[in-house]
Length: 393
Image (cartoon, rainbow, N blue to C red; front, side, top):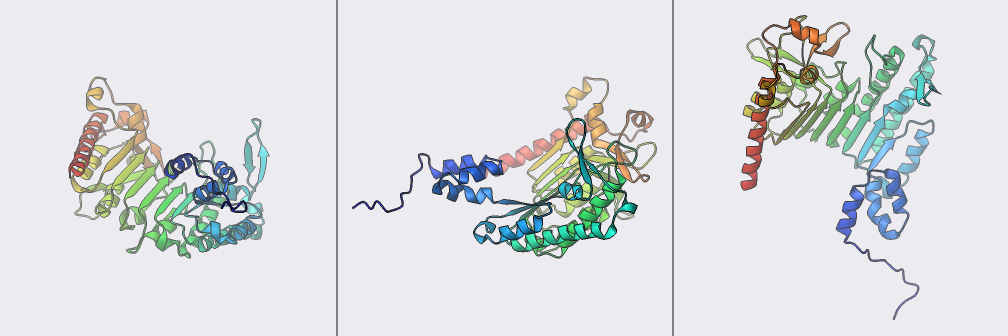
């Protein structure tokens, strides 16, 4: 009765659910690809997570690599996340050499000496590559755009030539995305130091937007997020907001309005949907030479606690210390104040952390870690109560 020619399927020693749980913890794509080759069973189980993410290559043969992959529809259907690492794209404009420690260093050519048509040709090639990838991967709902961190004139790491090339590359990538279908299907967007991010954020702002999760990181010291984002952009389904190293200003929206931070304006516009907020090293910044803060993080947290009813979690780093701990010492934590408050200088158009000398010159409207800590504890207590209430229901 046994057929020796029949294909034998090996039954796993562990339940498939447990195997899938273990596979989900593997963050190395190469490891997943290797595991996929071990048996038919593992090929079936590992293929979806192994091809879930597609990194758009920034190599000279990138167009062919993408085209070849798109010829495999049995794999394309598993791609749900596209990632663009523009760091590799900007390297294409310069010569890569090794420093004394063996690290790659890119020597960018002078803009006035660049063969302009060659630079534009390379940027257009990358733009077309992004369009091809977005059009071909029809199941994509997550987009990650990683750009090199930009410096500031006069500070270590500043390179004017690199900034110009990076901005142009970012601009054309955003223009490509503007013309694609992804603006109606995208659910998760992660942006790191994208100079032209306003273009993409404006495009996604729509009553029909599907965006539920937004992450923006590494903006400081530049002002990448402006009025159009804080005061106008609306994503009706947005539930999760993560900001890291972002400058936040205080202003009066209309003449009769109370003062408000940019963050409050954005959150209140999404009060019906927002559930989690995560902030890391985000500055509330003012423009005065002698710093005065008519709005502090304590004010923000009190406002959020009272007016965003569906909020479930709010994370903040560095969190202010417990007010009882602060009262036991003579002064606030320099780390907390310095990383949570700053100044905006129109020249060179950037945010800067609050220095000790500026704190010494400050007037009475100055943030206190003790006050912030009390408001922070109150907010967390309210969120805990909401969680217990929903669990009880």
